[in-house]
Image (cartoon, rainbow, N blue to C red; front, side):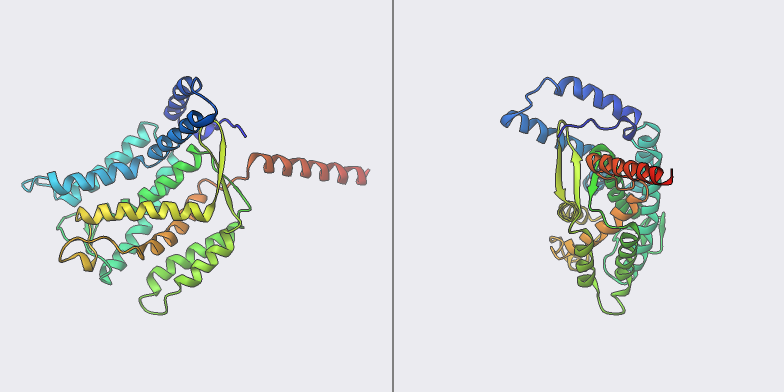
Length: 310
C-alpha cells in the first residue's frame, strides 16, 4: 500500500524537509534489495528525527560528564536544565515541534518529577552531584528525561503517520495508565502488582496493530512489540545516563555496572503511561481503509434510516 503523509501532520519546516527529501529519494529504486535499503534508511533517519530532543539531551549528559569544567559558576545539573529549556525553546520557535508536543513535554516533566521525588526519597536511585535548581534531592533537569520519552512518542505519531487497528476503548487505557502510575508508588508499601498489570496490558493491547508509513509504503507491527522495542532503547539510554553519573542506582555507588535487565519491565510499564498520555494529544486513528469503510457503512445506515422514514 502506498500513502502520502498528510501535510497537516508536519510542521512547516518538516514539510519543506519532506519535500526536499522526496525530490531526491523519488529517483531511487523502488523494489528489490536496493528499494528495501532505501526504505530502511528512511526509517532510521525518521527515528533519529523523532529522537531529536532526547538525543540532544543524552549527548549533553554524556559530554558534560567528561568535559564540564569544575570552575564553572553553574553546576552541571543546572547547566543541563538550562540547556534542556533552550533546546525546547529552539525546537518550538524553529518550527521543529508542534505546540501540542510542547504541552506533552510539560505534562511529562511534572509527572516525572513527582515520581522522582518519591523514588529518590525511597532510595531507589540518587543524584550524586550538588546543584541549586532542585526540589529536595531531585535536580529539575531530571523531569526532562521523562519528557524526552513523551517527545519521542508524540513526534513519531505524526512523522510516521501512525494508525491503529483494534485499539481498545480510551477509558480502559486511561484506567490502566492510572493503575500503573499508582503501582510505581504503592509497591513500596503493599504488594507489587506489576505482573497483574502486565497481564492487563496484554489483554488490552494484544489485538492492537500499529500501521506506520516510512517512505513509499506502510508497514505494521504489533503494538506490544513496539512498546518493548522502545523500552529496550530507553534501557540503553539509561545505561548511558548512569555511566555519565547523571544518576546512580544503589548497586552502582561502588563503581559503574550495567542497569539490571529487570528494569526493562519498569520501562515497559512506563511506556504504557507515556503512550496513553500522548494519545490525549494525538488520538489514535484507524487505518485509512478502515476509516473509509466505517464512513461508507455509516452513510449506508443513514440512507436506510432516511428511506424508512419516508
